[in-house]
Image (cartoon, rainbow, N blue to C red; front, side, top):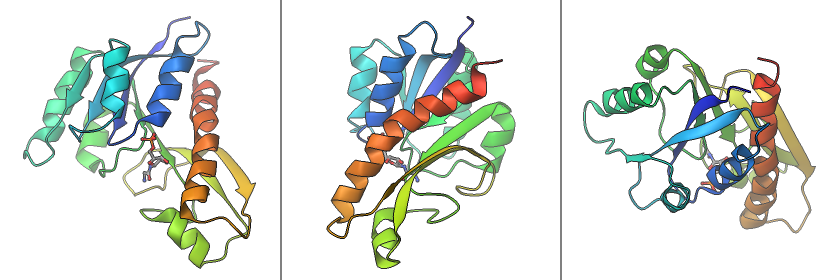
Length: 187
Ligand code: GAR
């Protein structure tokens, strides 16, 4: 199997990155993680890249040409898939077009509900019965591309924001890999 050369974008803890790294060790898993990009030099996720000898790029998004710097690295590492795994920066239309290949994102809500930030807080305020996570293709509009995988759970009356986050992330760790298998297994 020829694995898709993949770059994971992160901003923080990197638990999704960790699961993707573990799964990508399986010879039947369709991606090889060749690069990690972080817009936060303190992101804990960078440690997973280091531990697993995966090249990483820490990018200063205050630089005017930061997207060009990333594009250059993507080219250098022959990347054909980008996974946004907790990358808290909006990807520009120009970047999407220049990359020209698949970009997928994981979002902690049942899209199209609760696009954007503070999802858990809004889920509780709106007294939702269910919540979960979505892996979707990235297009020019925020959290709006076609869904690939969605996983949900029923909200307990006692659930607070932290509990919702923990339950959602547990589902995310399976959903991301399932989405990757779904889109690439037969390619
Ligand atoms: C994940 O829960 C992901 O859904 C969320 O950030 C978290 C990153 O966790 N992404 C967004 O909110 C994007 N809008 P991780 O760093 O432990 O993988």
